[in-house]
Image (tube, rainbow, N blue to C red):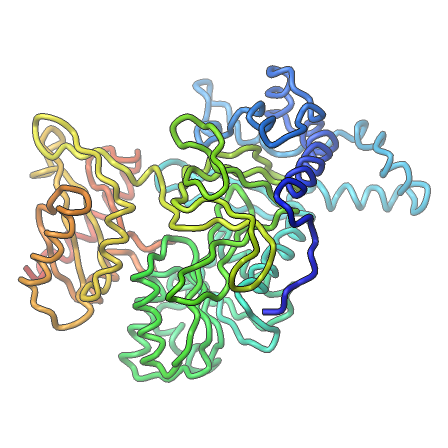
Amino acid sequence: MKKPSPRWPSHPRSLHSWQLARLRSYLRDTVLPFSAHYRRMFAKEKLSPDQLRSVDDLRRIPFTSKSDFLPGSDGSDPVRDFVLVPDRAVLSRRPSTILRALLHGKASVAEGFEREFRPLLLTSTTGRSAEPVPFVYTAQDIENLKVGGARVYEVCGANREMRMMNMFPFAPHLAFWITHYGGAEFGTFVLGTGGGKVMGTEGNMRLMKKIKPDVLVGMPTFLYHLLLGVVKEGIELPNLQKIVLGGEKAPSGMRRKLRALAQQMGAPKIDVLRSYGFTEAKMAWAECPFDENAGSAGYHIHPDMSLIEIVDPKTGEPRGEGEPGEIVFTPLMARGSVVLRYRTGDCTDGGLFYEPCPFCGQQIPRLVGEISRNSEIRELQINKIKGTLVDFNRLEHVLDNVDHVGTWQLELRKHHDDPLDVDELVLHVAKADEYSDAQLRQMLDERFASEVEVHPNRIEFHSEDEMKTLQGTGTQLKEQRIVDHRPGANGNGAANKAGSERKSELSGQTQQ
């Protein structure tokens, strides 16, 4: 990929100073005058933007976390306080407002305010562990989405002649919209199918056969199901050059399986790349094409649009370059819903690097390594004596890296469905080949014991179609790879009930 001209300082210290200057201006002119939440916070901390002179000063701004969005005991909705609400009296005193009025007239000023502050689009969190949290976009945010999305295309090594299929679910969620708007800005053909929920697997396959895409963009598990069907139908896709993944984790094993399926469709050389983003950022970042033997160089961060920190997940203290920790996000250009020093709950095991990318050559901050979620470390009551902490992030990597496993689902439930009894861990598997059930069961049991020191209570084998039903492919926004059917788990009783009903539908078909 052609190395672009630098848009920002290259040396880490100069880059941090440049970002802090942007942050001070952003806080002073945009956030504090119009954000009720942060205006109260800065007043309480007796803090002003001008006091933020070094990276170390950032710790003076308290973290924002998911708990800050929860409704108050009085029924109040704190989410509204994170939305920038303009005050015309304050805006009219801006030097830029006065100058614009003199040069272009009051109508132009009003139009500028509309673009900057009027909500036009809403996305939300998926609501798997709590109520969905909405984040609003203004016209300026959509422009940011276009620019950031186009940079994702650029980082992935795309060109304008490529034909792309956007297979993310058509829903008020970031992945679909950044792919859509980014493609429009990049100037390439992007066909949005809405994933499995809109057109179904067969509809997507028909379009793939007709369009012959160069690039597929979507969620790993859905694309795996889809490409299995493509291979089964004998459809050739020789033009396919890239698969770009987002919306859920994609360990190396999953990427390897997708690459193998692509080769069976007549695509001999293919890049399988990951993106990373979250609703609160209103932005995503991607890997550039890399040498599989060397490993990924990480997610390329746009330093003019956001400031990323890595902190100790327990203490909140900053971590140095290349040190693992939790990802903390602060926007530098956002309007609409705005969060500062947002603790994502996502941890990177490789840290943040500033040296030039060894593959594309860009001097740009990079998030390196595997990203896992704190929320996927769960306590299981394996016996009556004490609870056991199980890291489901590690189990996901284990399962995706077993060649004989196609798709899978981990199910948590209570023994005999008794709320007072011990927890059970049930593994549902659709095999990728004709490997022996008994041998695979033993292999998986041993892998579980070595990685997380627990054994699954049961391992149940299913056909690929049965696994699509279990995972909710084509009916759920995201494929359900880890489900918790314990009473009251995640406060998501409806989802638990639906999952149990899907399980009971298959109970007579399960291959033991």
